[in-house]
Length: 330
Image (cartoon, rainbow, N blue to C red; front, top):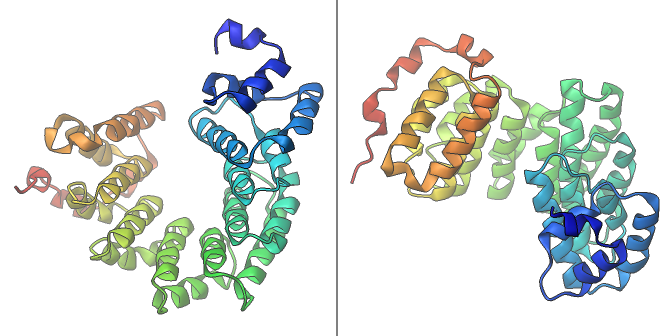
């Protein structure tokens, strides 16, 4: 942010953000870490802003916080839980994707249970998944998890719950250490609803449980690009190197989303071999469409140290990956 933008009176910042033809991205950073006085002015003026403008601003804030880990728009997002526009409420829930503030659990559960918008209820269920993961990883007290899991299970079990909300609840429950989860994933996977099957595969990845590996490996060759994407992501989350030969093949998948998911999965799995695969892709013009994503994955792996515990898990099966696996047939 330029000095001029940092020194601009907050009232003028809001005038421009709310009224100018284009939303100034640099000025949006002034909404980070709001103290009481500027937040009070923001809260007083925000409801009078046009619905579409509020949606655009909220969505820009989500985009910024996904790329910048220093900014903190949480006060704005929490305020927007009560926005009149469902699209703004969805954006606000998307914006707390990395929050660890446990005081948000209650309002998010309430949104999942009572909001009149199906989209908001689904976004709330998805937002709870982060808390389930953090509890399982020990990043927040595990005592928080039972209440969240109970709320998600209750929402999933309600006959009138919309499929999109059920999907989000199942995906959030994937990481939970609860005796019902395995059966729920199996039932959803074997059911007739393709969307629920997709979410079941997502939940398999969230669980990081190798019991699901045979299914995930099989679905990586599914004719549906949507399923291949979910299976690739699940393989990355599970982290077993048996998936590497298939990932090598799918890096050249005709569907860009599948190939992009391969890059993300390799970056998530880590290890010497995954790093080597990404390096080859970075040097191969056949993968030019993925080079930006590959560079980002390599930078993150190098930043984390380049050597990962998964190297110790490598089996002889990884020897099957030869240079020929990277030949893209014309």
